[in-house]
Length: 428
Ligand code: ASP
Image (tube, rainbow, N blue to C red; front, side, top):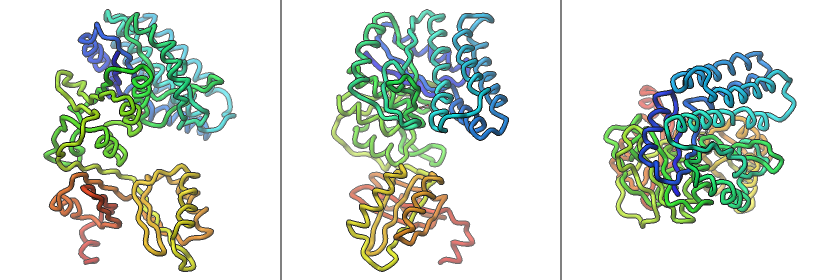
């Protein structure tokens, strides 16, 4: 069997859903688990509904109406009026409307997962029904019946043992009857509450299914021809990488390459399952193959991650930032769930680059301030260049103030601030 993952852009309107069905026609004879994200930008739209509901702004119902109309618009392009396909979708909408009528009584994260998850429930209902109408037998699977998680809402952790058991029990027999269509991003607790695995988590879902069902391969269908050497929106002359090792892929995605979710690689690597990144625009293209092959020569690969904050932490009494202080700092970073992207220490200071999560960073700084002096710089970019060449680095630094720079084998990382020309001249 194989696992396919289709993201939000691949099902963003009726024509896109038809295109997915066309791609799947070529795999009619295969056993496929098809993991699907919410349509278009519906996860963002549902997040706004949750915010409005939780903060009682009075706009939740109106925002939810926009979500409903977006889906109805797509369905009208796929189904006849009155088609049964509308029933399951309507039921899901009504359930959310009931929630929105009451005052919020649970935690923000719990409410978030119960409401935001409907994006995936609806997209999978629509796709499964459309595939069936198009002559491709498809069974809708509730991902919560398979992916068991703890109750860390919004970043739930998977119980791999139970999930593997469930996958074999529920999915294997279903695959004999046709395609299995299921939601990305979603899991369920042992008490049957819905959880989510973190934003952009659908790739990870596909990797979980691949691992548990010993898939022959997994394919992620994207709006780009494969994995590129840099973001084409930011750089000219980018090229497609035909092959990548798991190692190269995990390094790229960890530092912010957006093509696949960083958690995707480990389960695949652990069972040596090849991962294809392919284009849903040009499905015949070869895409990029990520596999267990040993690294060959790669061209320079540039990953730019914006939205970074740099904390400069120094001891107040001139004591060294040695092991005890470092372990205290790391314990606090873990406590506040902050991801460290880069770090550097001197005798009495420690600098750390974090993805900006303002509330968490504020709480961390409050804790750290008891013992340390802190300076904070925000709105920075972290640029990672793997297999770098000096001339590329020089070009990338133009117009930027470099706040931190680190070299490790063939990789360079710099944390930079964009500075207007006038400030640059003044600081020279
Ligand atoms: N729909 C979710 C998100 O936008 C999960 C995903 O698409 O991977 O974050």
